[in-house]
Length: 414
Ligand code: LLP
Image (tube, rainbow, N blue to C red; front, side, top):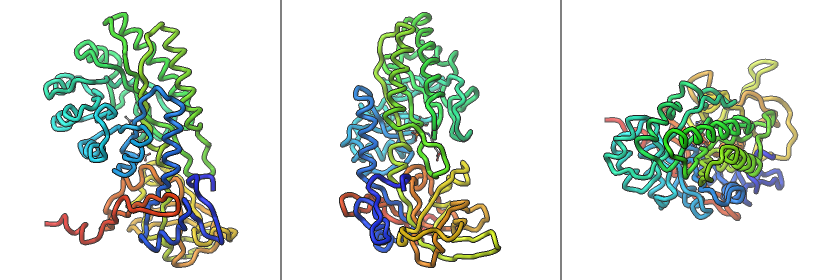
């Protein structure tokens, strides 16, 4: 139960989030359905703000680009980190102010750079040719993204600060960019789903050494230091518990202070860009159980009405999830089941093994810790429309993203 949102409870066998029964949500809004708990999102945003009151905290919009979520986070004092024109427009539609907007992208086109400039965002230069291209369209506020050769302990597809990364500039190129543009500061992001802070602390040490080298060679030091996002969340009970937001941020702050002091650097304004750790634990995905098949002594399948089109993370990163039956949440498990999606391939397995009471057609399967990078990466594979999302708060629910229809999917055809 501790993988579920803060407001989760079980009463009369029913799982509720923020005082709303999951089975009622499935009935009213259909399935698959992403349910997000507003109180959990707000609490996690506040944890960042409280741990680093002087920092600018920007939400990594890619984790779940949604206008209501961005607005709620803005109320908590967060800005937005965007990485494409689409995400920039989400942030702008949500009313995110330019001075709390950080614009990323390893291959920004001219329109992205021009709109970032017009919107007043802080642009993170990711390539040498961006120095002139950004200046030409009026970008004034910049950071230079640095790749310091840190191998963060995470899936290789979401590691970004290693030697040879497609992101950022290696130190010698970063020095050149800094000399040419005289940016406001430096940016690093070493990877996502980090479960220990060691790589992040090592990065801070290297960053301080790099900043000291810039002072010596160029007479320049960073006014801003952006440490990116990356704090992981647990999606299955057999995974290690990542540090709390407070511990992760406090350790980083402490390390910056000591590393900066060791090089006698002037203090810099900090930016943090958390995505997953803000929305991940706030989300529960609800599916309707369909076919249940005991195919052998050892293999029992429970098939749900979604799968890799609404959550491709098991296939992409070997992500592991857990589940319970939301309408029979107080029943003890009777066996171990594999949860399959409805897609036309054997790899469409959402959960490899989970203990459940014997599922029945029509039950509601609830998968926690699915607020980040699920619906955000959803597709129309097999012609399946993408799910809806609802925000639950104080006993009521509100649709924050409408369910697609097959007609809409067909609408792309010519
Ligand atoms: N800042 C930058 C520059 C990033 O590239 C990212 C994530 C973030 C911040 C937010 O990181 P977070 O706090 O969410 O770890 N689809 C993958 C994750 C890709 C992360 C991309 N960049 C997944 O499902 O695990």
